[in-house]
Length: 120
Image (cartoon, rainbow, N blue to C red):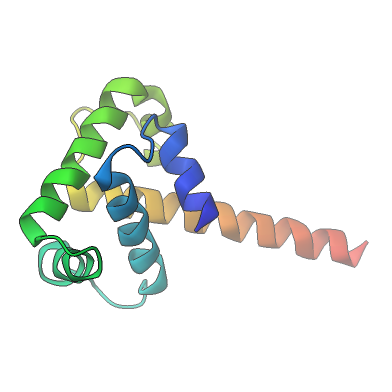
């Protein structure tokens, strides 16, 4: 979870935004359930709303706020994480998926490097 928070901070959002925690949890849920499709409006928003004593509408809005902050503060890093130049601000589900994929790829690369070091 620490690496999720680090990545969100790298994009320019801090814990002063409620959406910071919502994004982190959504990314974690997405990474944990990669083998099955997850619907952000039907699965993630209601779960997070219940967990954080909020409403699905507020969760959606707060995540969107974090995306806007990241888009404004650090578009270049968002492009790097996406793997291509973004022409528009990503939707909530695109943003969560983009971060989850980036972190899973980074994690896979680190594991591969560690296996190579273990062989030496």
